[in-house]
Image 1 (cartoon, rainbow, N blue to C red):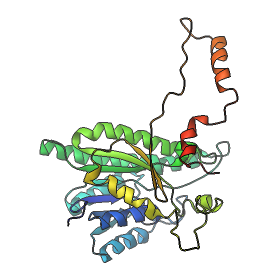
Image 2: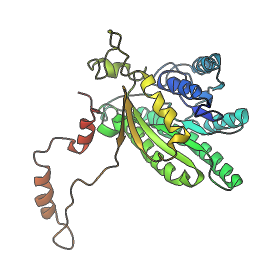
Image 3: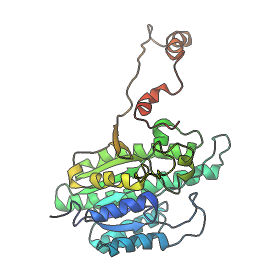
Image 4: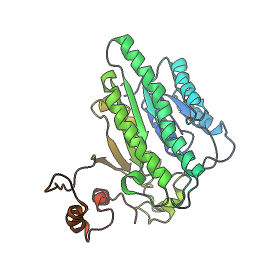
Length: 319
């Protein structure tokens, strides 16, 4: 029986370790030929000397299991290198079908202490890195669609975060980048739908080198230590990878412009923001006094961030 991704070519960025590696292995298991991208810097903040080892090792693991894979060690935050990544997939396997954007770094600090470089570097890797690869992949699919005279197969899976959904006090740069990725995703979904391409984003919760200290302070089965009673780790990246495989498949043709939260055997479909209340002026233009009389009573006594109540119901906010 044919695998759902047989004959497809996928790129996974940040695939040398953690979540990206699990996603690359899953796509290969489903039959895809995988271009494994990882810049290979050892520090989760993007520090240290870049190494080809993480990407090469992940690609070799796929090949050892009988799959097809090639490594790419460029920096996706560099526009030219991102273009070379997409071109590598095309030159090696004939075309690109799936793009999974996962690469990222962390440089956490409170907003009043954050430096310009800490802000710029995180926005660059996460948001610009997503844009760079998407730009070149989109151009490839648009060109193929014009040549074919109709839609082609294309899938984009982007990586957002619960830091965007529910806030994260010590991560203003990361939360902003992840929010920007959702905007990029929905815009891309609208722009590429006529070419047969879908774009979706996931908010994964997974234990990786980027999150090890975040989850260490949370009780087990709410995202903390690995259970020692034989049960699987609820934060293993392998809980996330199957959703990526599904979104990359033909079965997900009707899923476009969506944001899905995933971790520990749970997938939640997030809604776009809805209007919680509406006020109309009794005159031609609002005055300060009228707004004070309407909005101040409305917000009085309400818990902070009540607009994110849906996230709390889903269990997405950390205690």
